[in-house]
Picture 1: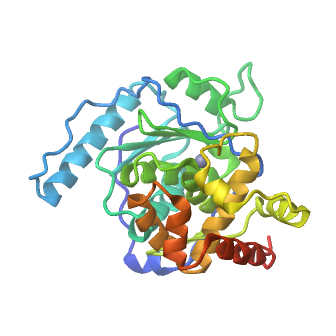
Picture 2 (picture 1 turned 135 degrees about the vertical axis):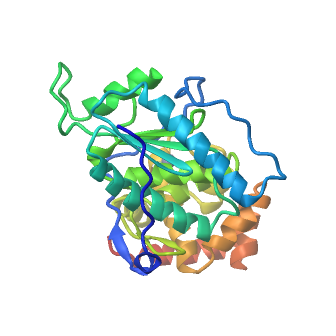
Length: 322
Ligand SMILES: [Zn+2]
């Protein structure tokens, strides 16, 4: 149960196009609760601006080790813990299994996202908790996900949690029911990393990028969204003529309203459309500093009126295969 550093992989390995990240099959119920419950995180101060990059990295590594040590006191001996700054990973599984999830669904996607979108890395530890029912002695609650639900409540007092997992902004912790697959882990990882670079992003764009990564191809310096299960409902809405205007999706502050399910699909595929046009990175960079008017930002980056963009987007959706 000691913390361990993963040996870095050879760089050529990162060039290889690998792993499709399987997406979950059910509705995503993400939670970004901001209550004060924390994983006994150390109260280390943020590094002073005048620290060298090496000194900042060393300080972050030390804060990660402290976070891991504090977390271990709250877990049981079934857990393995790994430290790979800025990440602290813990899971009730063998260390080799935890390392595989960490490499495939955290470190590689995070490195690709940093190169594609972000201006700097996280300055504070991000904790990744992976819970599995495998190997857990059955208790009274034997419905799938009982280890996840049990630890979410024990560590954070969280009940009625989403099926796949969630990200808690205050303790900077992803809590994942890893038996449902790695797709949600990359989704929540995206939220955790955006929060560092683009504070309080509008819901539509936060979820557009996170859902884009539910199913993706990870390359060394890019992460490419691929079609997934959300396409069918979007196409049905397009064919029925019931899809809301794109301008409404991106400008009205109602993502979590009655249209939430379809909003996820429309936002995801609009992000994929911008990626298809080679403009998603530009949009991210521009929108981060011009968040007050998303429609204007889209028109600026794509160089077309939004109704023209919307028509082309709808036509492109019709060409996709799930
Ligand atoms: Zn989300």
